[in-house]
Image (tube, rainbow over the protein chains, first blue to last red):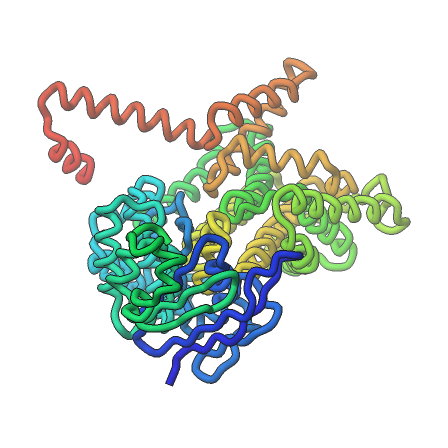
Length: 251
Length: 331
């Protein structure tokens, strides 16, 4: 049974018809990568799943439940998390405070006003555990704008994992990274537990083929192909269009 | 935790001791500083922690003052008067907040300003409540068991309310809700992505700030025995913004310091020259240009300089940093 069904999404921005019936099916545990040239509608697709922008027509169904009319924060409650193409963090707060904010929301403490945050022991402990697990333990008191770009990307992923998502939407996790940072991000993505299914937009073919177990190709807002990595890699047409005749370049 | 207890102790001690050290005029002036301090703290809450720059915060102050003055003709208990003042301010904050919070930046500023101007017109044009001349009363704070009549007892009363407000606001700022509020100011989109209902945060902060401003307004009425439509004016709204700016945004104590500086300058420089607001303006410009953190940040910088100087001296004498830290801990 599929965890998430996305059926025939349509979205226009004025005259610009960005999504034309894009679809996708996600099973539990999948690492599903969306590829496609610039302007194919990948980020819009993810935004529609997540609820950042409303769709025109189509359905997003999470475990038999239609969620495409819900506001984002409710979708987060139901188990959809995301990271952003550009780092989207609280840059003037410390690393720990960033994680606190994420955990407070998950634990439903966010509306408590009469007990200092420092007395919520479970939040403090889990924050420590998260930061240790993801190798950020020595960065706790640094402000986010003092971190390197790669470290900020890691924090992005940590924050999105704090909400215990069933599905994680990663929007170009390696964009703007150096080759070595990209390599460690691949390791990071592999480290995400299988209980979290992933939909990922990615340009870097190394990342795509080392993480994906399914690939969907989006072109002009349409799903033109969806399948296992071998099938996509072997497909002549896809090769022609995206891999420039076999050469491993940016799609 | 320790620092909180220390702060409470210092505040209580300061309020208790100050009148013995100062002239009655100074006590009177500090009473005003404390009232405006509560007012400025409440604006500092939404400006410095919520990123909501309001040019209409005087609405709540004015409503608080009018509530006390008008109701004092019927009720004498200070509890009832202040409670109603706070509730009315909160209610107004709730209604206008729901509307104003939909917009950001300059639009939020103009909307809050418009609401306050509306109140200004209503109170200055209507036949009730004294119209443009304002409304006077003669009310002494009646605590139930004792009626406070002397300026000194008024000072202690307001000092008590100030400490209470400071502690409550501090609790609010340090709670999960307050942390969330800062998150909303820092990065609203990310907060939504984390599952927060961002609008609730802003509205709640706006209501809390409105309530404390209402309290300040109510206390102000006890001090001046008077409420006029000018409380809703542009001047009042701008004054409190200036207090927050010169004191230091993003802290609770900064705005109080700002209120102190403003009122001291107003009282002392105005005895020397009529152009005291020119000096105020220059200070304001200098702080905005060179030190966004305000006066509080300036003081912290100075203290930092001094302690880093001490550190350097210690280093040159060959004392290790660890020892210095140990000594600091035991002192």
